[in-house]
Length: 206
Image 1 (cartoon, one colour):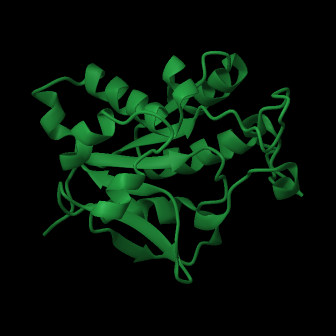
Image 2 (image 1 turned 90 degrees about the horizontal axis):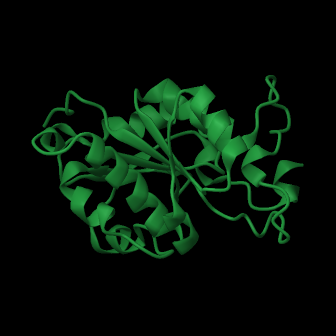
């Protein structure tokens, strides 16, 4: 079966509190400079740039109190959704992004959405070629695709359009974990350690 002609929409999850990075909430890890980056980009911007290099449409979901982060992502070329749903966790954040895309492209336009690539803003080291490989793995509406590196499954994860309604109904902090447990996942092997490398604590930036 051939790859759908329209690439998936990327949903960049950028609404977390990052309490392991700064329990007091004064520093947003997504705005921290990425060490060694020649452009001195913050974490979230590097993540967004990789997605935008691979896919034409990226929707970032941020907290309502994240005006600086919103501005950074807007300037990068993302569509930005500021949602109170982020306070309920990753699942609610993901659903907010899906619903924003669906609301802007309602049925019958919904049938032209070929799927979703769900990415985390605190994973700035993933290569655009990896993102393309995962997106290209969506060869049917029922497909779920994730990258693998040396036996470890990583991020991002792509879902075919058949999962749109289930993703849009997520809530709380579980995310799409139940889908990843109950459904078959196609693993695309990549030579990219970035798929298993995230920024949780200040030590991760050293």
